[in-house]
Length: 183
Image (cartoon, rainbow, N blue to C red; front, side, top):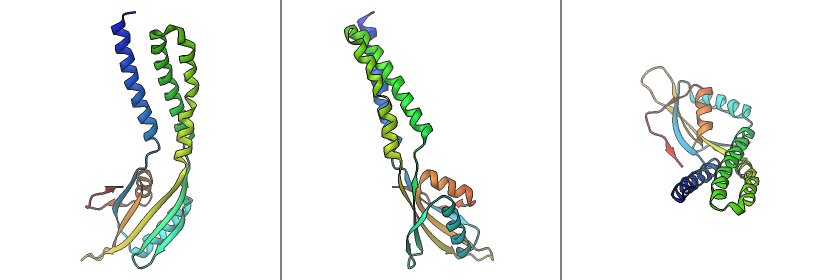
């Protein structure tokens, strides 16, 4: 095969392997955000609903600061079997592609390059060990004074973005006009 074709194929495959490495590493990245949400109910009833919601999701109260009306919940987030298998499969395919290109460049080492596919489960193990961790959710509930008779509460939540999405859907909370921030 032409050396130019092999070299360019090797370069592209190497770039894809680097992208795969960063994709696997990003699977365990912390994605904590802070958002402000508005509830159409008084502060007291919202706090009770929040407590019930986090109890159902196996979170426990870790700290309470009565002076600032802030509560911190803590729970363990389990890793996903499906994502671990997916990452292992992606790693196996990526290593296999790189091995095939390398075996064209160095035919005598083909069996060694193909044996590198046995390293693919390391991606799933990496994800499994790093993704299973303790997560904290910090809440601050404040009453919003309104001229109407409608009572509203402002909820400031710091949590993982997936947890924020679930909370917003489960309790039918609307985003505040203030922007969210990432940590």
